[in-house]
Image (cartoon, rainbow, N blue to C red; front, side, top):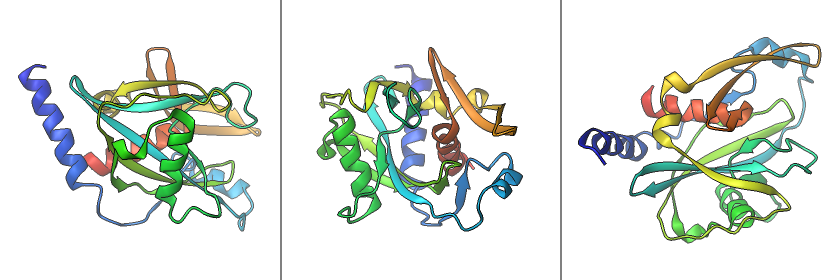
Length: 209
């Protein structure tokens, strides 16, 4: 690791320590780049609560974020890149419990390796979910066990790459007869977009805004 890289890692760690604890709840979502899109949805729709973990692994070579690619046979969002997580169960005492439980079930990452450092803003999806993201620092030494019924693969991306504005794309597609704008990031063969990219943008704003 070079001196410049070490300084960058120290800066990222300091920001993760100092800038995730403001406790202010804001509304974020698939509508950030096109607020008028919300007008096409039912005004009183009931959102399904969900929680995800943003696992930041403390590798010797630098901080890495763990992602999953959803299994291709799933009914919703098949094949898409996501954070480990899912819907809240009735017996989940707090949203963070759901994030840790789902992470352990999907990729076998024990919660004993995770130190939750803070949370991001709730993220509303066009498909009707309210996602509560939690940021966790993960120490090395774990061994993943992928649940093939839910996850096709797990992979890591350097946090420095994800926090570089040069890698933050804004793209557009047609959805339900109208334009939809969304955030995206491309790392090698992996295409990160939609809610996952939007949550990463929120993390960037929290750390560097």
